[in-house]
Image (cartoon, rainbow, N blue to C red; front, top):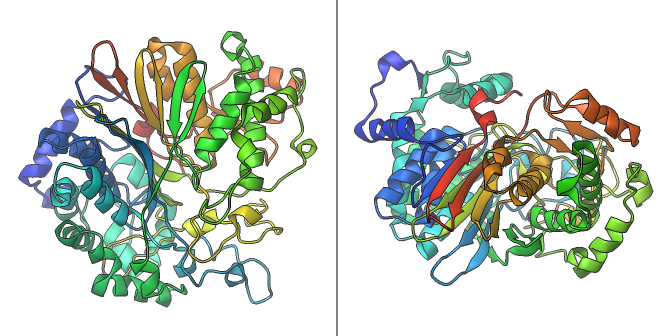
Length: 563
C-alpha cells in the first residue's frame, strides 16, 4: 500500500540508489565515462549503474533497469507486459533482437471481442481479462541474463526487489498516471489498496510499496522464468484472468517462448542503422522512410520544406505498415518493401509542392496503439550495448492485477486488429496482416535503435505509441545531419507526426511557429497542434575518439505525464 513519507525510512540499498540519483547526469550530461545508462526514471538508471559497478555488463544492466522500471513505472511497463531488446555484443559483433513481445492466448479469436449484438465491444481489448496477452518480460529478463549476462539473475534483480520491498516516492509522472486512472483503480479493492491512500490519489512524494510484486520478483530471482510461467503463481494469474472474463490456460503460459530475431539493418547518408525487426514495425518503417528521404537534400532545406518531405515519407511508410506488417511467424511481408528501387518509386510519387492526400495512395487500414511505454539505453566499458523498449500499452495496462502476484497485466490485445474491415473504438480500421489469432504477437511501433558513423554510436529509443517511429526518425535526422553538437537536440527538439490515417500533421504545442504551420497548410496539409508534448527519449552516445559514453534524457520526462 501507499504510506506517507513520515512513516518510511529507506533501507541501506535504497539510500545508496538515491545518492546515485543525485550524482547521475540527465540532460545535458555533466561528464563522460566509459559506460552510461539512460532510462525514464532516475532510480532505474541508478539500478543499472549499480549492477555495472558490481562487474555486470550492458546486458546485466538492461535486466536491472527493466526490472526497476517494472516497479517504479507500473503504468508504463512491468512483469505483466513485454518488449524488445536490441543487442550488440562487442566481442564478436553479434547484433540481434530479443523478442519478448506478448502473445495472444490460444483461445483468442476476433469474434470473442464482440458484444451480444455482434458489434465490436470497444472495452474488450482495453480493460479486464480479455485485454491481457501472455506476458513476455519475465522470460525476456531470464533469457538476457542467462545467455548474455555476467551476473546471476538474482544479482541484477536485486535493486528492483528492494525498491518493491522498501518503497519509493511517487513522482510527477506516476502521480499523473494514477490521477488519470483513479476511477478504475478505485473500483478494484486490490488496486485501490496498492496505488491509492484511503481511496484517494496519493500526494507527490508519498511512498509506494509493492510487497506482492516483491514476492514475484524474489521467486523470479531464485528460479528464473519457470516460477512465473508454471506452478502455483501461474495458476493464480490464470484464475484472476478468467475471473475477469479472459481465457488464459496453463498451456498459454508454459508454452511462452522468447524469440531471437535478426535485427533490421540499413544505411542513411553513410550512417549504419540497426533497429528492431518484426513484430516491431519500427525497423522496416524507419528503413522505408529514411530511404525515401535519402533522395532529397533534407539537411539543407528550410524547416517547413524539410518537414513536408519527412511527412510524405512517413505517410508512405505508415501506409505499408498498416497493410502488410504483422507477426513474422504467421505473416511474411513482401520482400520488396525494403528495397532501394521501391524507395525510389515511393520518393518519385512525392509532390514537392503539394501534400499527397492519403486517399490517393490506395488507402490502407491502420489501428491505434497506446503510448504508455518506456525505453532504456545502455553502453558498457567493453562496448556492449542495449536499446530496449518495453510496454504494458495503455496506462496501467488492462487495469487488472493478476491475483496476489502484484503483476499488473497489459492490454496488448488492443494492438491487434480485431476485425479486418470494421473500425475500432478510435475510428481506425483493422488489417488482415495483424488480425488477432491464437499465439500471435501483435504488431508494435517500438523502435530501439543503434546509429553508427565515424564519430561513434548513438543508442536511442522512446515511448510514444504510433508516434515512436516518427520520433526516432527525427532523432536520427538530427544526429546524422547535425553533427556531434546535435546530440542534445536529438532528445529535446520539437516533434511532429503523420501516420497516413488520420490524414493530418500533428505537432507539439509551442514547438513550431505560425510561419511553419502556414507553409505546410499552403501545401495542402491539415495541421493540428497536439494536446501535449509527447515521448520520453533516452539516448547514450559512445564517442569513438575518446572511448567515453554520455547519457541524454528527454527533458519532457521531468515535467510529468499529461493524460
